[in-house]
Amino acid sequence: MATGQEASFLIGLIGTGIQASRAPAMHQHEASAQGLRFVYKLIDLGELGLSLDALPDLLVAAERMGFDGLNITHPCKQAVLPLLHELSDDAAALGAVNTVQLRGGRRIGHNTDWFGFAENMRRNLVDAPLDRVVQFGAGGAGSAVAHAALVRGVRHLTITDVDAARASRVARDLCDRFGAGRAEAVTDAAQAVATADGIINATPIGMAAHPGMAFPAAWLRPSLWVAEVIYFPLETEMLRRARDYGCRTLDGGGMAVFQAVEAFRLFTGLTADADRMIAHFQSMNQ
Image (cartoon, rainbow, N blue to C red; front, side):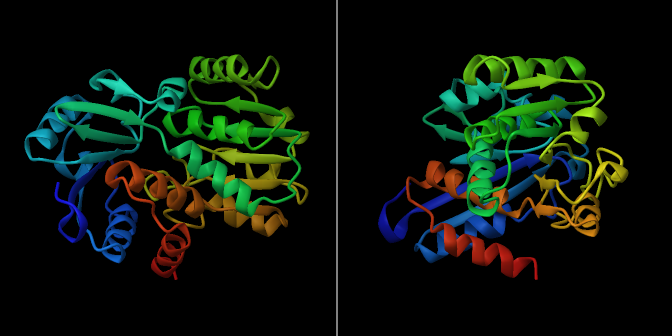
């Protein structure tokens, strides 16, 4: 990699169903504003007809082709862990990676998802009640979002997932990090939602390939705030129905931008202009 005006970067995104991802445009626009040459390639397992079994070969191929780093998304955030040489403290604690630095033959995994969600909460859920929150989803994004929720002051987080063991594991890890009783896993979330201040969707349900909601719309009520991790579409069915009920809502756009801000720093060593990235993201969704 050269320096100054000559600096150039080759980055990729590995995942399934990522053709509509805003990541390439966000990174390339910010890089251009900073005088960098930046190529960002989509490596879509679905488009390539590949399964998770191809992940080891894709990492090797990226290294051989001179990639500087990779973003990792659904369904690879946990599957990539055993393929890395080193994990940041956050990635190790969360058991999920969304950013990989490729440095001198070593693969270093990071998690910027939690920062993205935490910053989105900090900026856009000011003064929201945080006593009791229910989160749907305990996968790669879910573990990061749950961590972020407790960092931002959620006092008790109830987690539910189609994989009950996974939800239990995330809740147990949260209690180890934040204190006993801060999180619990349940298989029937209806009662928890009935007494909650907020709901977080950290499942893929709501994406174009996974339409619908993770819970019945009838559970919504005006006193709830509702947060989403999905940003394409920016208005999921859950958010649309929540607004119809009069709920305060938080879309996934902020998380997408702020996780990219941190990933950009890891890839380039330079600080991204968060406000510029937000403005560019919003311009793509008008």
